[in-house]
Length: 400
Image 1 (cartoon, rainbow, N blue to C red):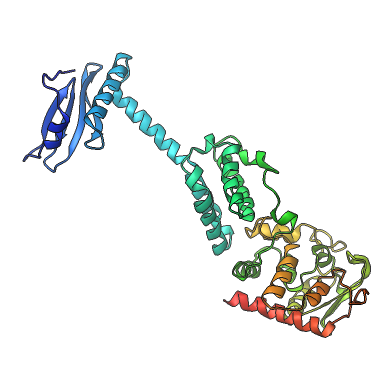
Image 2 (cartoon, rainbow, N blue to C red):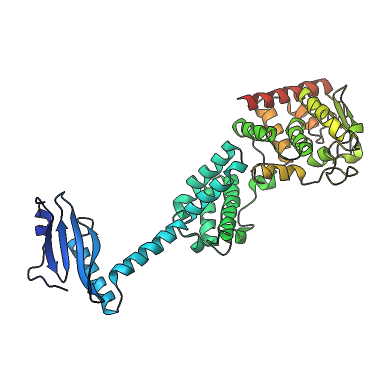
């Protein structure tokens, strides 16, 4: 490498002005500053490797100071002393960094989201991405996905837990696991560290069934159900679940003999009820319409929702939940049982229905002032009105 008798000084570099053409100002040992006609100041290093003269770009001034440039020159000299071409080493490092960036958690997460977004309701897909952008990417987004460990993910979840958004933490945990599994399938990592976090977060609301209780969240759920493209029998069950808010087992085991479409009533016998007391479910106009549409398809069966493999059995215990998952709603967001919590909360807090009417329609153990359990027809006119008001309210939400 060439040597310069008079090394550059910081003051000299600062005062250098552009000329009509590019000018090289040398520091020594092949290091020089290229002052361009446009006013740029670029560090360059001339060196020889394999009998050929080569040039290495070291960065621009003032981002790279004189001291920084000299250190980079020394680093290049060490590589040369070990038989390594500094230019090729820089290219390899840049390529490795590019591969690392391409395999970062955020890049793969966005790829995963883009790949599967068409399977989810648009608003639901947007919520998924926003959760990741707000709660995950700022902490582990730039890191190579292969280097992320279970404690790294747990730290992200703990931040959400400390902010009292435990339900969001559970959703993010589920989504992160899906992203890791996608990365495994596409060859970017070897395992899903989220699997090690089972039980690391406390359950939501002490184990209550997840359910949206904000009308803004209920509306897209209802629209998604109306757009369900799976089995028509399952779709009808999904549509009736929020309207009737009975227990999932009661819904899937419904029999046509229990339903009177003329009087708009569903009489569930005591042996099918959790509390072992017969229960009457008033059917709103919307529920009657759904059942009338379904009758030509399953009316020959004992069950309203027969198993697709055998009409002698009712629908699978998991059919409704599987339908919800197919639409992109996780277990931490809504379950078949969660429609009961949704109805109870909104009927009370939004529609301001008397709590005892709601509890009785939920088939809870409600007693009168004298301590006696209400019978199946207690407050029936009020409950009929409540069920129709509830159905009309839900229909209005979908139209917003």
